[in-house]
Length: 110
Image (cartoon, rainbow, N blue to C red; front, side):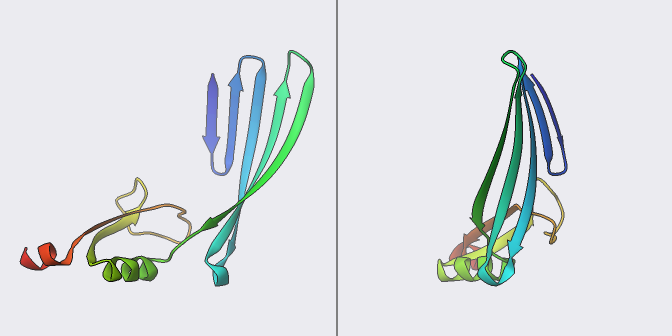
């Protein structure tokens, strides 16, 4: 198996089948959702067939102030919020975050 991933592109080879996938995000800021459009080209060499698929997934997202509100109403307090697998603050180009929280009572004691 060969897998190459770069930006919004992914290429995989498994035996006689090759798959090339691209992703295109489309943000709907006023609705707090984003569409992730997948375009896939599947080539099966053994039967000499090419297939094209297109899929769209709607994803709900939250901005950091909304995450803090949800934590607050749940009795929690944020301890950190970074980009997923990053040691840096979130940026507009990031689609995934990792946030930690602790109970307010425990946080206030420490």
